Length: 197
Ligand SMILES: Nc1nc2c(ncn2[C@@H]2O[C@H](COP(=O)(O)OP(=O)(O)OP(=O)(O)O)[C@@H](O)[C@H]2O)c(=O)[nH]1
Ligand SMILES: [Mg+2]
Image (cartoon, rainbow, N blue to C red; front, top):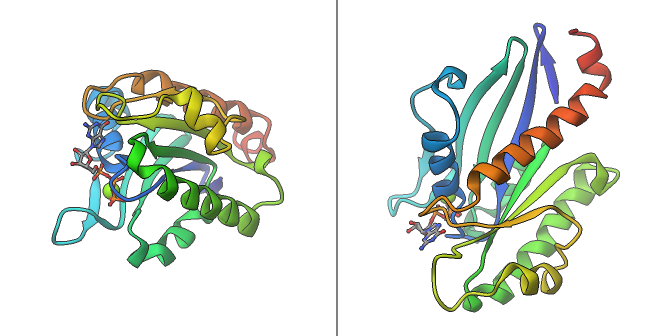
């Protein structure tokens, strides 16, 4: 959370394996959930590889009140650019942890959970310092695991979670409002917020 010229900025990162659906989820939410009145730009800024995957990040800001702004980033899932994930993790307030629910991705997902905890340990004293919402994505496909299995297998059962599809939009509105609510609750108890009200 940062306070600049009386404006509070809250940083939310989409984190998860390559092709899990981070960019598609952010795009769906931006098009279908966020009201136009909150949008500061008409489109999401992306730095992609020539194959269309995220190379560095996607970024879009929104303004939800006179002095509260959210900034959404997606991290690349590609291992070649893993260093940029660590950089993007700095100063996050919230993480949408995007899991590719396809059975074939289970081992890959386990490696990513380990990396997630490494970043948490690098930048935070405790997991309680960030808000995490888990999206068990690609639930529209066949040959997937359900959330009840993945939560336990990936040790992600301590966070609020949703079974989602970034293609149909299943549960994305709910997941998004949950994140905003959790972050705003934290904001209201933060010292920085007290200086702007
Ligand atoms: N069927 C289905 N396809 C999805 C879903 N989410 C994403 N995809 C597809 O999966 C592919 C990768 O999606 P992206 O959103 O680019 O994945 P990403 O997590 O941003 O990947 P990186 O940027 O490489 O880390 C695209 O072809 C999407 O259309 C989903 O919920 N269901
Ligand atoms: Mg992406």
